[in-house]
Image (cartoon, helix red, strand yellow):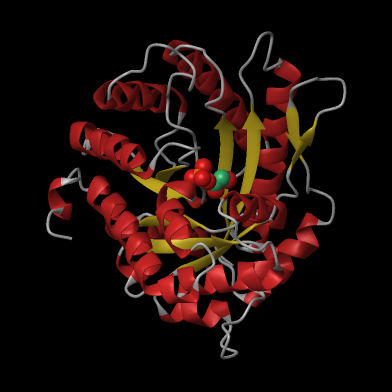
Length: 340
Ligand code: 13P
C-alpha cells in the first residue's frame, strides 16, 4: 500500500460533503443501548439491528464510510450476504474499530487508558485482508476536579500515535479519536483549553512517531460546556470555539476533521456542524465533517426497538439524520431538509 493510496482513502472519506457513520459499538455498549429500550440483548438482535443499518436505502448518498466492530465485519444478512459486500456495493468504504476499550488507569482514579496495542499489527493485517480500508481508536479524557493528569493525556496520546503508525504500515487510514467527555459542570473555556492541550500532545506524538498527517483523519469532540454547566453557549458560539481550538492545534496537512457526537442530540450535533461550515467554509484548511454514532442512529434505534415491522420507518429515520449531516457540511441545514 503506497502513501498515495492512504491519502486517497483519507480524502475519499471526507469528499462530496459526506461523512462517517460509526456503528462500531462493542457488544457491551450495544447491549446497554438495547436494554434502555427493552430490546433483547442477543447476538441475533445485534445482527438484525445492524442489518437494518447497512441495508438502509440510499445510505451511500450521505455516508462515505462506516466503522464496524469485530463481530459486525464478519456478520451476514439473514439471506447470507456478507455485510461487507452490501457496504461496498453501496459505494461505502468499510472501516473497523481496533481498540480494546478504555480501561481504568492504574494509580489514576477516575481516569482511563485505552488498551489494544498488543498483537495489533497482526489484527490490522487481518482486517485489511478482509477489506477494511480505515480504522478507529478512541482515547477518553475525563474533566473533573484535579483531572485529567498529564500522565493520562500523555499515555493516551502515545498509544494513539503507536496505533496510527501501525495502521499506516498496514495500509489502513487511522482515525484518531481523543475524546474529551462532556460530563461535568465545567465552563466551555475549560473544554477549549484542555482539548487544545490534548490535541497538541497527540500531534507531538504523531510527529515523533513519523505518522503521515496527510493519510489520517482526526475525530475530536466539539468544544462544549459541561452538560451540567448552568451556562450553555449558543450554536454559533460553540462553532466559533471549536474552530478556534482546531486552528490552534491541528496542522493544515490533515485532510479532514470528523467530529464525534458524544451524546449531543442529533439536531444539535447537525446544527453545530452546520454553523462551523456556514461560518468558516473556505477559511479552514481541512474538511469539517462528521463521524457520528448516536447522533445518527438514536431515532432509528428507538423506532425499531426490536420490531421487524418497524424496519422501514427506522431506516427512514436513519437516512434522514444522515442527510441532515450532509446538509450541515454544506452549511445548508436545516433549510435543505424542508419537505423531507
Ligand atoms: P458518538 O457519535 O455516539 O459519540 O460515537 C462516536 C464514536 O465513534 C465513539 O467512539
